[in-house]
Image 1 (spheres, rainbow, N blue to C red):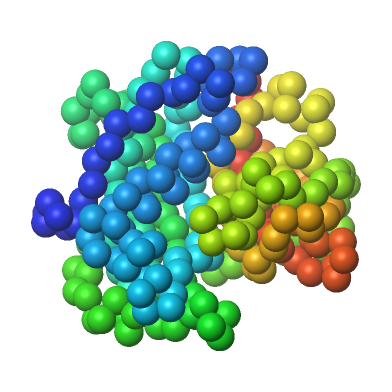
Image 2 (cartoon, rainbow, N blue to C red; image 1 turned 120 degrees about the vertical axis):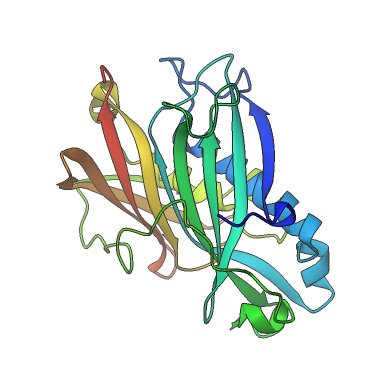
Length: 262
């Protein structure tokens, strides 16, 4: 990780009383909300946040997010989230995260609760196509730094047919500041297809979600999932979210699940 303190932001988040599920642990999507919040705050502080990009006719669009948790926080807990920009590639800017025990030393046993990495595009609001980040950010220097996590594959595997499905629709409450459905809502939509019997014996500790297309209020979807090959013994599911009106794939995702007694 870079030692430049300006390029690293730490922030403590309290687990809200409405976030934990019946087992007392928060869902992985609650962590995703924290990552989204700190990423926006840090970009604002570094001079390439929402209003900065707005002046050049651009906005940030999350292309992919990979989160893996070692331990899920629960009711009454706090976490310290650390983030830093980790590089500019041809069409995406990457940002990494550590989810830490706020009471522990960074290198101590059990200090790291989770890791995440993300890829973002700088979308041109006029053309609705991405412009290279290094051009939009005026060739801002991002040093080569240690990554918190690597994407496990070049792309998330597409699910051709699902064993379980759920239909749902985007509400006004699901929209973000750009008027599109919020990134975390897509993960929640994907998880809606997971059968209750699966969730009764497991809980989700990781996801790798790839955003394929934007969608808007009123869009109806079919969310499907199916069991995939285990990853080093950890059960996984593949997910696909498709817009019903045009059969457009909106999201594909893989999720990792751990036994509830683990």
